[in-house]
Length: 150
Picture 1 (cartoon, rainbow, N blue to C red):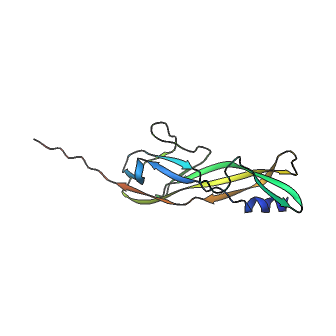
Picture 2 (cartoon, rainbow, N blue to C red):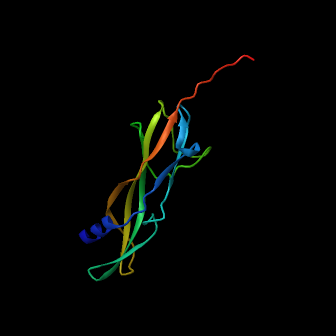
């Protein structure tokens, strides 16, 4: 099992990136900002199979999602959750910023995995790994209404 755990830890994971809406990574103070996870094409996503050989035995490792933790850069976060978020109006991962500024936003992903030795049945690897995602800077601006008399 130690060799399987070591192989699991060496798996080249897909590193999800976070995107936000309104588009352009810019939002307003007190405006609900929607977040969603986008998987990179490099590395293994949940359900994909990494094949290797361990001590002469063919091994398959199939990553599975344990959860995401969304880190909003202002000291708050949400999760773990298995939700990939979404866009307006139905996205279920949202955040309100209370102050203007630039915030490094990321999603941390916790993976588990199943394994199969030489094509046998799938069993769980009793371990997880949490990978911090790359940061995306979200700019929060402040808007003020002005009444004008024509």
